[in-house]
Image (cartoon, rainbow, N blue to C red):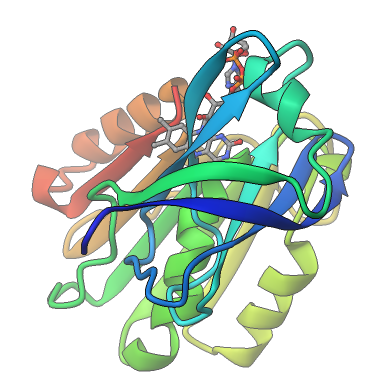
Length: 230
Ligand SMILES: Cc1cc2nc3c(=O)[nH]c(=O)nc-3n(C[C@H](O)[C@H](O)[C@H](O)COP(=O)(O)OP(=O)(O)OC[C@H]3O[C@@H](n4cnc5c(N)ncnc54)[C@H](O)[C@@H]3O)c2cc1C
């Protein structure tokens, strides 16, 4: 995939939860990427700039835009700029970047996608892009957030689970009891890790701890793919 640098316009800045926004940016028609990849955004705060990485939420088949799902951190350099981004604002984007992509010729029949918070973004893109074409495979998505108020894309993912019988969606809350699953993602992994492929995305701790649990379950390293946000 050729790497492009382009000026993107904010199409929408929508609040998904109290601290997560969906920033939708324009992209050239010939901008293509693979589900799971990310872009960098040049963020300027008036005195300095930083390049920040964000996974692409939309599937590659949705052309002409790059949707980003961004957790706002109080006092964070990019967070404080992006929370105020409004329709028509412009940002320099570079991408697509990264190797955390869905392997289409994988022989394993079970695909486990594991995300913490906004780490669900590349996994969502993979599901939207590949679910229909891989009806013979079983997909599982485990998404952890702290509390019910932190859940996002809940409607979209629930609908996806209803539309595709081969997707099981497991949202889990780590700090609140509810009707659904609770506890950390590691508690919802399959008992037997053989012949399954795992895609893990999120903060360092979630990625490293999940990998450790999987390796203890004798999952082959080649069947574990990950993207770390920190
Ligand atoms: C390949 C890649 C893809 C990424 N994709 C996404 C994405 O799709 N969505 C997304 O929200 N982020 C994503 N990130 C993280 C993102 O690039 C920034 O690091 C994050 O947005 C914080 O930037 P900031 O400038 O607002 O905060 P900073 O000023 O860099 O950090 C402020 C403080 O917050 C802490 N911090 C950073 N991230 C978090 C967090 N998630 N939760 C709690 N504390 C945190 C830092 O350790 C630091 O102490 C990705 C990172 C990488 C490397």
